[in-house]
Amino acid sequence: MAALAHTQLAALNRLVAEVAATNAFYRPRLAAAGGLGGFASLADYTARMPFTTKAELVRDQAEHPPFGTALTFPAERYTRYHQTSGTGGRPIAWLDNAESWQWLLENWKVIWRHAGARAGDTAFFAFSFGPFLGFWSAFDSGQQLGLRTISAGGMGTVERLRFLLARRPRILCCTPTYALRLAEVARQESLDLSASGVELVMVAGEPGGSVPEIRARLERDWPGARIVDHHGMTEVGPVSYGLPDDPAHLRIMHDRYLAEVLVPGANEPAAPGATGELVLTTLGRAACPIFRYRTGDLVRPVALPGEAEGAYALAGGILGRVDDMVIVRGVNLYPAAVDAALATFGRVHEYQVEIDRRPTLPEVRLRYEPIDEKSDPSAELAAHLRAAFQLRIAVERVPAGTLPVSEFKSRRWKIVG
Image 1 (cartoon, one colour):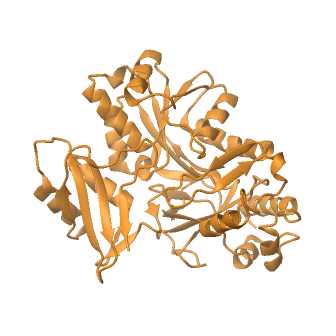
Image 2 (image 1 turned 180 degrees about the horizontal axis):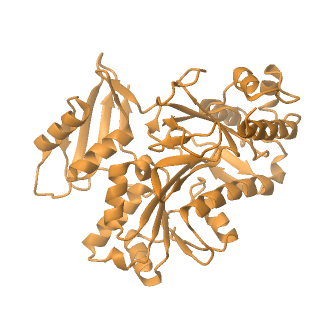
Image 3 (image 1 turned 180 degrees about the vertical axis):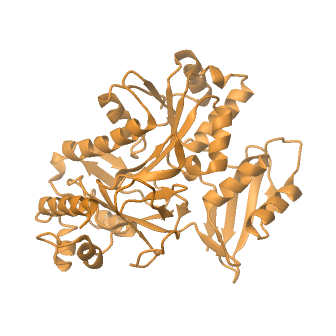
């Protein structure tokens, strides 16, 4: 057995031993898989352990309010409350005790270190801290590493920009969309971001940080700064990290997660180099564990030189969501690809894609606001999209301010039917 597989199996069986007796959600699943006493191999585990889906967690919490049955300990033992953002439906509440929260913080420390953060740095969180996990674990772990962490949750965009220029933090943390929004408002207010002192822009929540065209735009907007991506989920915690010198890949913390990439909707591995759905098992966080969670994230795994046997990175980061991917006349269409195409076009301020699945052949329409309100580049944009996807996409110019703008996850993908 390879060293990594040995490490993962040992961690998996330690987790099973901690949760099997008292976690009412997972005990019957482990029993059905013959795993109450642990698993003989990772192959045995992936062949026999059932998946966990978001729909099951939502239903469990609805039937067993307020927190469901997936907790290993009595509710009074838990000190942290978070919930999913709810962009895909009803939010899921998620609790951590002190030990499981610290497990998350240790994961985030890996992200900080690989990004080049160091004790004494100031990290500015241009983010409205709410009950979703968001950057909370980054905030707390940064403090443990000796960073000065500043929340901008109560500030408006202009206030945040003026704070950046006055206090000159080395690190900015936000979504890719909001980093672009900050730069746009800075131009409107004649504020010079080259004087902000920001050297690292750490992004998450959307695919943009790993999309070359979006990353290039961010680097232009934030002179002298490196863009570092990472990803995670409330249900599983921080999963992957980016490297400033290799922005094309997100590296999974394989010693802390058992990651599978499967054919969407199936229990078989995706072909090497093919796009598939990321399925995750937390190898810690015993207070609120997750076994074989179908994340819904589309990824493309690639082996990199020098990595442990069995380890892989995610080329292009998170490519999109399984539910968002649409096959239109034989073309796979998903958000990151459209983001990249519009970034190279360069004349779109904001956009929204509407996909109607009700006809026999799905119909795609892109509504957009141009950067120059006096122009109408619709014909050129339609031609650009057709060249990019070999697909006709209807284009509609809308007045400025029509489309939603968010500092959290952007809602640019609307599917009907």
